[in-house]
Image (cartoon, rainbow over all chains, first blue to last red; front, side):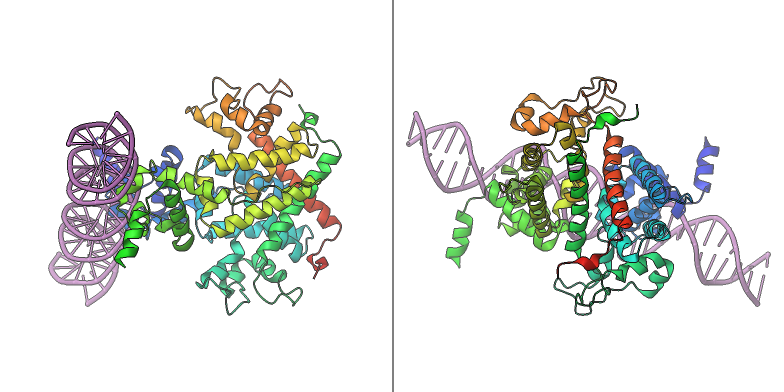
Length: 238
Length: 238
DNA sequence: CAAGGTAGGTGTACGCCGTACACCTGTCAA
DNA sequence: TTGACAGGTGTACGGCGTACACCTACCTTG
């Protein structure tokens, strides 16, 4: 017993151990039970010890999000973009069901965490490899956004949001910072695709209203088609 | 000045006055500044005074959601269901942009508030009046769900969630309680439409996985169509 | 091998939160 | 006139995130 306690104490705290314990606690007891105090207790440590490894609770949440998003299967190489995207998104869904706190956590944060950017970037890459124009890929990502994962919707607002003023930003180009653009080339590409493609719209990287209506009309047109052809769910395989 | 203070004090606190002040505070200062203490101060009153009109903070949030959702325009009578739904949803979007705290608040709560149920019910009514089968309307509501408003996704899970056990509920029919069904007939109708329509699926009111894939494939098919016909956003009106 | 810097766990304390509970006060019915 | 009651007040409690000073065990370097 003393031996076990000793072993536990000897195992040093680390950012990863904290993140994993936090995910486990949120999975099992719900996100509302995830306090620095409860988490520290689970780790057999005093609350302030955590702060040697994570800056604060928000950073802890960001780390947890990255743990969860990192569990999404990598894309399987496939000639067909549609299969690839479909499998990937279904994998993401399974992950988010394993971690019920994750969708809300993702939506409530800035969502510029590395794992999310990686995920989105490789998704854009799949579309591009499938022959999509950067312009279409841009709108498609917006359309997929909140329906499928609950994020990506406001991704390109991040640069705009950085400028604190509530009014329109005086320096509008809103391109990604270069080091970010280098790490995530597909994202960088589509971030500007929609704006410079006709110069009458001088301002922001993308037009929220247009993106929203694009997705809405896409859904509505599909729904209308189903309606017209008398769709019914009885045509299921089994 | 004493006169004004007197007038302010004389105006009695009421649930509506509290709700409106809470919405205003959340709109202007952000939802994270909405504490019972701050809200009470805005109303020139001591924090505990609020509890004579709202049971607790969660109930306050529910009331705020109803205030916001109540601002969505009523449906305009129109022979075309598509126009009706489109206008309604764009109105909802405007409302949610006026109250940026609302989407997250809605998603983080049980979302069985009266205004939300009314909104959803009348939306279903529009589809049904347009000739949709209850079955199709059911799936369509799921597909619209999170993309358009961020809610309705888990609506029909409410009854399932009421049974606390994490495993499958022993009494599966999961129909709406009769008094709810009476108030929201269209919702009641589609809640059971998908389940009893072939009896091989004995259990729950609807199949989450199927709903998700339905929406996903709807999107993907539409996207594929755009892709094949070389869609570009340059075809915009102005 | 001695010295001392440093990484990392500890203890205390502060200000904020939601809210339970006892209390007071003005109004109105009987 | 009385007394019930609706509604605002004051105090207090436990929980939260976390600043800050401390302590301690190890590792580097002469």
